[in-house]
Image 1 (tube, rainbow, N blue to C red):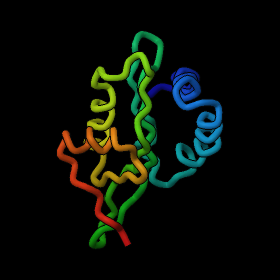
Image 2 (cartoon, rainbow, N blue to C red):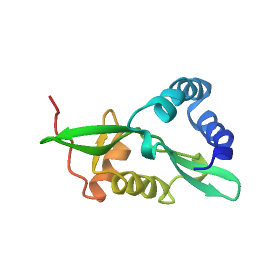
Image 3 (cartoon, rainbow, N blue to C red):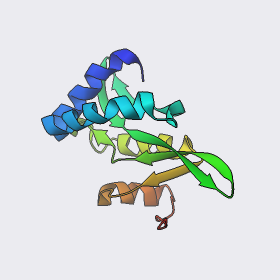
Image 4 (cartoon, one colour):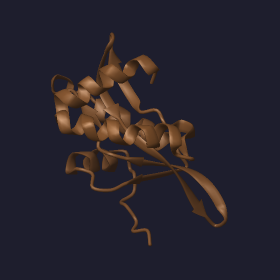
Length: 130
């Protein structure tokens, strides 16, 4: 992710998820990327084709404390892929990057399609956290 990707990133969101999704993204961006104390790896993962962004996975960085240790965690939303690029493995590439980039990976409310990809990647089912 580069700073000049922001516009293309928002265009992808607008095209795939609609104007409201872009507005939600803009509202949370400042805290998630600048004010969040866990934001050391806060940039979204992007898939580019030339100058166009055709896929993105937005992850919220978190710190997970386990047995007295702080672990780098990433909380994922469903990846967004341009409709014309669906079924080309981009969803899986984005999920692999998400899973590989943190000590602890978290997700909630993901779609069945995302769960199917996670199953193929052998990511265990979620464990309820108290």
